[in-house]
Length: 302
Image (tube, rainbow, N blue to C red):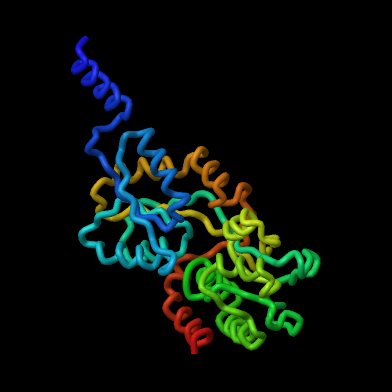
């Protein structure tokens, strides 16, 4: 066989092994951190031969940029699948009819909202029994949170509003500020400040704690119990997507045991899922979002 024929034969075998034509591609918008998502999507390409066009969010806009882009593209969608590392914004898209009718939002993997503390300053036994205690004098100036207008902290605060009622929740938010709680730009910053000993205690996400531990910070973490929140990855199928079949194929792959194990090994999700801390009424949360954001802005920004 000539070298040319050998090359042609090898190319043919490669295409057949990919189980897909070289022109097939699927577009995914994802808020999952690129360092975690990219190897997973590359593995899908290798196993299927389907090219993945991925659009990642920016840490600065905390998923909102992707949401606004999907809404702007609603009448001429370019995305097939939205892979979100939380749930609230995906349900927002459902409320705006951006997601395909009759196709449920799918979820897999989980992170948790947790206490993070500096182990050189306090011990596990000294942790507050609940979030309400953070307004007590003993925690004055010792607590840091991400500004609750973005990301998982915003979702967590709005879930607390739903659970507690608006009046109690507003009073607690104001009491937090009066007690000297520090607000910073993001959960990773919370971990860094606690690790450096600038504050003793913070609220953050389990994946940020794992990152801090990998960096050798003197910290520990623990779920918040009844006041906590389980943060699941969600998948939203886009209404009128160019390639809905490939979107569903990618969604099935992302929910596989292999992918969950890879994400857990990388630290993106918890290796063992924490028990749920109460159901979230997502449609009601989305409906109340504008009012809740206005209240948060008036409390934390004015």
